[in-house]
Image (cartoon, rainbow, N blue to C red):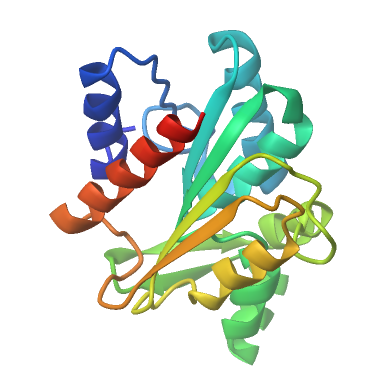
Length: 214
């Protein structure tokens, strides 16, 4: 909840008198639980619970990276509550399409033996523990294999220098969405986090455009 994008959006909404909700998934940030016990389905449950119990009326969902996948799953569960969705470096199906393809034979063997393997990112000196649980359970929540039956406005932003989630993932997402109101912004010099001042300005301008349209 303390990420730069979350804080910037909070200020954006406060300045306009808009309600705003941010929360940490199970095993993330201030929430209880171990990250290694988390799954895509459990985090989607968290999002749906927050939507159902802490909000009223139509909502715009905003998700970054993993949150972009959870955002889609939440919208699919509650389409009548969703006014629009906004994804930043969205990573739907990353457990299947990205992680499983990048693991070495040695890492696969470690995962089978220990149930978890450390995976390094250029953004964090500490590795992220990737579990066999999240890979296996993630297959129950893949969204890019068929048409995604959402009809709300969708805005996608992705950096073309993203080393973690290729921008082509957002292109695939745009193609799979049933909605006819889908716009994508590719940013040539931006990377995965999209937390630089110009990225945050772009995020807010995109949200402002959505709000005007609604």
